Length: 333
View 1 (cartoon, rainbow, N blue to C red):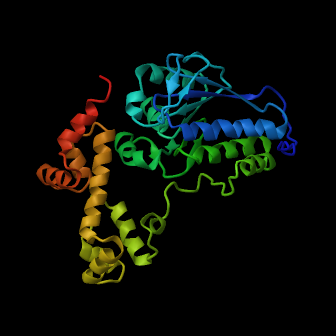
View 2: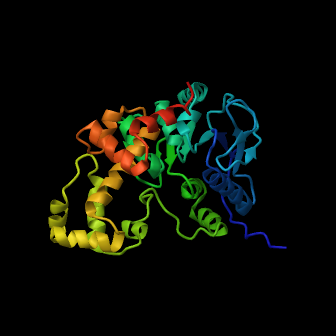
View 3: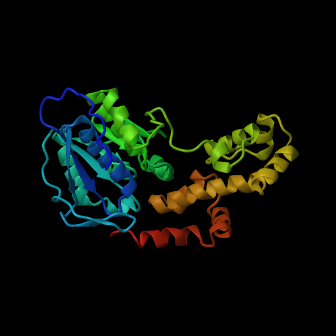
């Protein structure tokens, strides 16, 4: 048998801090598991119950996560203690899972002073409930574009996690571990937090200063500083695209050299690569917001809906209107 880990001494007076994991339909299992396991390991390592938790769903019934696993829960959306912390667990189709009943429960508990955290895409639901107005927040990078368009009053960041008073958001995935390690360190010291990370074989603890996505060279599989710089400028200028000539000039190249660079490393022209970035953002906005097709086109640098529709159909083999219609059919009425 494996030996128990060495107990880390911590000062602990009072009852355990309780986390209420509120599971939304099709929530992401990784974010949930990473958070709840960090708490379990903290208790085991401290040799005492520092944390407790319960699991709830909207109606108190079993609920499925996005990979199909089914979870039993303790109860429904009951009234909580003021010292509780809600861990709202989101996943795919978060708009569909964001029901009026859930929003009303979140608003009620927030008014009573309960701390609310959103894992993965649950930041959307918190913002929809008005809990992030004037606050800093983060959300999974796939949802960043749509979130920024819909919730202008929220100070959206690209951080791994954000703690702004009693409002907490994470980007999803293993970011839950980083968040829980911070909370454990703040409450019970760095020694315990580091031991929890060590037991999870988590050797690169990130802070709220770390950003979500891999670096551009890592993402594209190419380490070329000028190419990375051009792609960065493209990603930062979707609504007002920059011409290849200006992009080339800004990195000290000719347009022809830039063209050769893209074709050599990415097998496409700079113009084509830029178009794909814009269309990818457009698809995110169509799938995740109720913006009109015209406004989506403008947000992605297209001067006219007809040109946008033509480019979109060429790339995705469907029109923006059909894409929007097929997604709307999946949302609740």
